[in-house]
Image 1 (cartoon, helix red, strand yellow):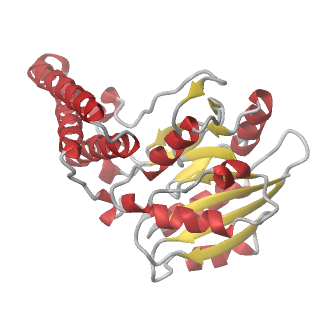
Image 2 (image 1 turned 180 degrees about the vertical axis):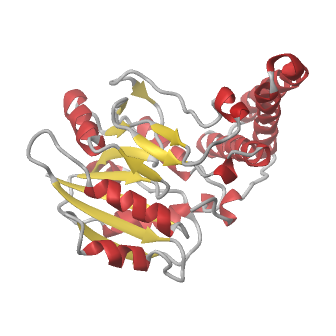
Length: 307
């Protein structure tokens, strides 16, 4: 069995080095699969090349490095898939600001076998290398939903996912390149995978830790990110179901998020700053969702965050 681990990177050389060290430390409860690492650098200057050269001879897995000069995550993801070896059975994706648990890939494969799943997704848990403000911890702003292992999903994300190679081969198109700078091309793709009848399940012990720099633990960054998430989710929903009913549902959801946010803000003096931030984030999410209905596209990925 062969697994290709795809990594998209952009101007995060230290993050890439951490990830490569983490991938080199992967362990397996039985005979390990054949593993190949495919790194696609989305920087036309090839800034990740040096890190790959440093580790290529040290890694116990093969490493291939490619440059995608067109700016945008889906361009790089699609190139990574094109560069996967023909004999690969599975493809995994993990981000360049993450570090997996040693059992990460083994757990994904174990859950895939146990549930005969086409796609397996795992949790991305925040890791703070520096002390962050107490309101960030109280607000749990970087924590994402988790589920019992085996729970069926209707979407997945490339931060921590494994899929049969046949899933990518069976889809009529891959990651939507029109979403190059808005984000959301992974949720768009895996939503289509679910609609095509493939099974997506959750592996709660397949942990990857997101290295979260202090620069993200700021009010402005958190609000901006939630605005982008709302905007990109709206764009995905409209692209997958471009009817007026879809837009009406999105408008109703946006209104609910914004009302909840407005109601939370006055509670901040009693419950703390994290409640204020949560309220503003909800309003930002609703605003992003609402603007997507009119075709507004927020291109957050014109820049990178942290190393």
